[in-house]
Image 1 (cartoon, rainbow, N blue to C red):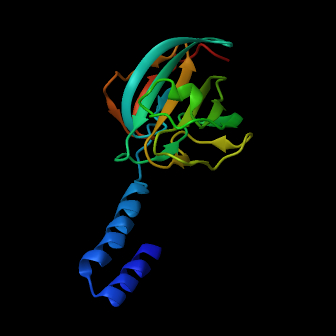
Image 2 (tube, rainbow, N blue to C red):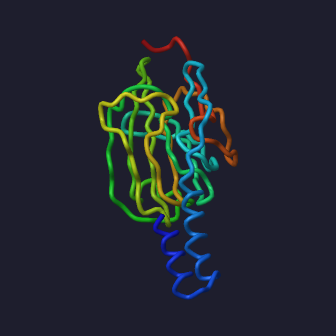
Image 3 (spheres, rainbow, N blue to C red):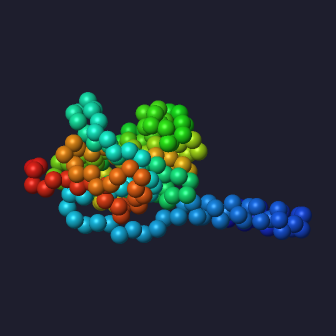
Length: 201
């Protein structure tokens, strides 16, 4: 609305449609950037869905203080939908915001050094999945709308990252990864991995 008022003011003051077109174009860009399309969420048990739209840049086995895990990294360019969604249904057992730098989100070091929000969801079967919203070179604000202790559904909207960024998903070691590097995924709709069924109480 501000950009449209500015456009009208410029046109009235200068009579130039070209000058008035600039704020109109900016308004159209921001409306497009903050789009929030509906998604069909997979309902099969044990699935982990992507928390964001983007391109898979890494699938790797990693070691953490809690033992072996698997990590999937997804790069969100400025052209992707930036609404983030919960990867599994469950309770948020931890939500931690960390200040940091604004390295290019394509740089693997951004996962540790950049501004980020780290959330862990524990499912009913005891499986824990952690996902990081990581700011990028252009991203200057991370939004997370849930609190520790909240219950979330698989694919539920939980926040967004403004402009280019990265999302990392940390999975149990036994998860069956179902994406490959270079694959494009959609938040809430694309399956990243599946957990073996009947192995946890």
